[in-house]
Image (tube, rainbow, N blue to C red; front, side, top):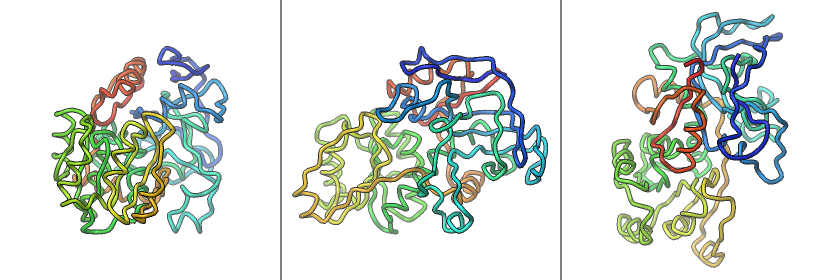
Length: 343
């Protein structure tokens, strides 16, 4: 089978479409033919290399996607051949007690496929059946491949910030995968949503998804617009995943007793904090990684019913993955790019 792998760190040129043996399902496992798998910023970070995070080579990239069940290992009974499924990004050895309370993503051994182990940019994958979710009938598997990682991440961020009905939330990069999901989830939870984006097309998308206003974060004065729209108060919650390029403005946009929650930094890992502003205004800066697997059935149900929608920039052949990486690095993507094997 074909699999998209890296054998060393570097630019998009290190992506290799390799021929490797098709995996075999063991006890409790399911063999899945991948129908589509999305490209995330995490794929870029793994490809480039992250300080202090060794990656065993070769590594198959890809954090989430969709597929069709084609084989079952001994004892696997939750799915049947031909069934369409979503491929969950996260996994751990959490026991049922933590899963019941939606805390699996907070466990010390929580890991993400494509980062800590081989991912889904391949023609076939094998997973324990507990990490598969049946796709609702009628849901397009290509569009659905753009759902799991970003919607779980946005869900987890808003939970971490304890967003309450009636509060104002500012979503940075609202046309990105995480940003577009955060706008929709925050609106459904009864918040007033403001968003930022770097082009007219992206700002129009933010408004279409439910943001009340979309601000150009390329302008040096964009935090003043947030203050104007909030009568000088600022946003109760700031959803931040851009990093150094927007961090200072995000902190300036944060209300007294506000909470800034971050899941990463697409423009770099290091930011600065003005401590007096932080403690005098009783503000909080919160980190968030992914979200509970228990949220996925709710997320897919709302996507299937048209309450939320994944934003699909394009679907391209897995053999052209380097184009997806280049466009994502150039910030030339609206929503998500999805790779389709075998085309």
